[in-house]
Amino acid sequence: MTGEAERSEQGGDELAPEEHAATDGGTDHPVESPLVEHARPTGGDAPETGLAGPHPEERPHPSGRRDEHGVRKEPDHGPEPTRRATVSALVEDEPGVLARAAGLFRRRQFNIESLTVGPTTVEGHSRITLVVEETEAGIEQAKKQLAKLTPVIAVGELSNDAVAAELVLLKVRGKDPDKVHAITSMYDGQTLDAGPRTITVQITGDENTIDDAIDAFDQFGIIEIARTGQTALERGDSPTTPGEEPGHSADSTDDEFTNYDD
Image 1 (spheres, rainbow, N blue to C red):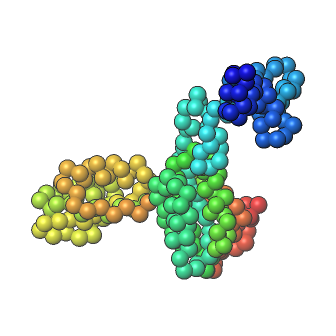
Image 2: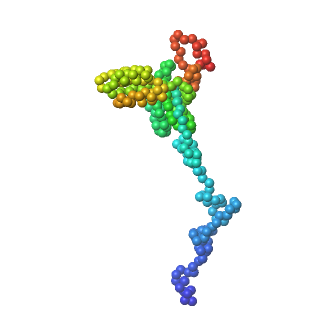
Image 3: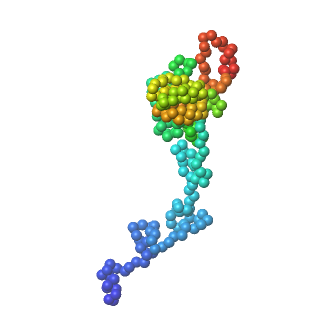
């Protein structure tokens, strides 16, 4: 009797963990006790409590992560290879079109090596030449994003054998003018300014020619350098951008451009 009185004073008989689970919250659904482990059955049978299937940590998860272009990259394959591409775009002459194109690639963090713009034979049109170092997916994304800009008329990628050239201005120290002139002549360049302390020369050519010329002038001490970046056109009758129709000179005949239009 003494023991029953003590339990009565403490709030009644203690319930077993199973009875607590059955009455907790006043619902018909049992509450799992932390002392009881519920093993989920294998083979697809639904357990008595919870949802069928494996635990979230037991489910398969993709091993790779998506890059900035939305392409999933598997870690075991290593970094995706990149390549250089020359993209040409015909655009309408509108204020700020070059800034919009540059801002587009800057926001998407494309690896731009050079960006040039200049007029074409068609009045009111300009050509943007863009050289990028990107993955295959990145190059395609760059062309698609550029084509979405309102002033852009057409976008195309040039072939590897396209005619490409750029210009560089070099200001070097003038202590050895004869040697500077000899290097300039070797690269078919021009001397634009010559003084007692500095000499400024101009060199044009493809990328390798420009790189070699810079290395050659480095012995005199290059003070300043300005490089335009690459501009390019397709060879022969192939248009540089899809659907491009070049302007004809006043004394030309339509027959001269028959193959081009075909």
